[in-house]
Amino acid sequence: MVEQNSLADNAQFKRNIGFKLRIGDLLQGKAILNGDKFSYLELGDKKIIRCNIIGNVIDKYQSESSSGKSYIFVKIDDGSGQISLKAFSDDSEKLKDLSQGETIICIGSLRHFNNETYISPEIIKKVDPRYLLVRKLEIEKEKNLNTTRIKISPEMFAIKDKILKMIKDSEVEGGIEVEKIILQLREATPDIINQEIRKLLEEGIIFEPRPGKIRWLG
Image (cartoon, rainbow, N blue to C red; front, side):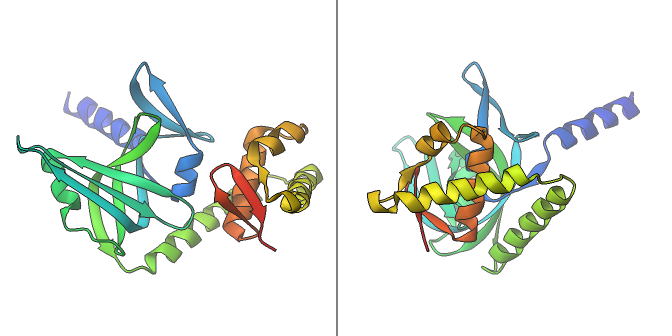
């Protein structure tokens, strides 16, 4: 019986592994709900329940009601996107000592409410800002390893060139909506187009003046 329980605990741990990710990757994921309850974040072939994120604290909001119930919301940014950490009641102690400008590692569970995916923190640790670069390089190395396992077809390069051309040509109009690219570039799926756009954003070739709209940075 002890051995069976141990195996069950190990299986549970594996299912809820804290994936090392950048915030931009999390924001690309799709929240899968069971009714109103959040089940997991679907990102490619991954089903993500817990994550391991590094970011800079850029905003903090703290409140305590007359009944003694408190909550703290902290927003962090890692250069690829922004996400909120939310802690309530006793858990708010985990975020209490954080200040704007600090760099932290956050391991926590994902939550989804009111069309927003956020993190319920389990472990918070302040780190040197250089850890942001370390994490970025870690993720890029993993992506490169995955890419070498997949043969990239000439069609993929052609799609990237077409996306770039559409973005450049739209500069006279002040940029282009991502949705417009998806509608017009029918030879690629929305997932592939979003993936290529995300790469261009991370490479600094394009930028996003507002959500859903992109411009050429050259």
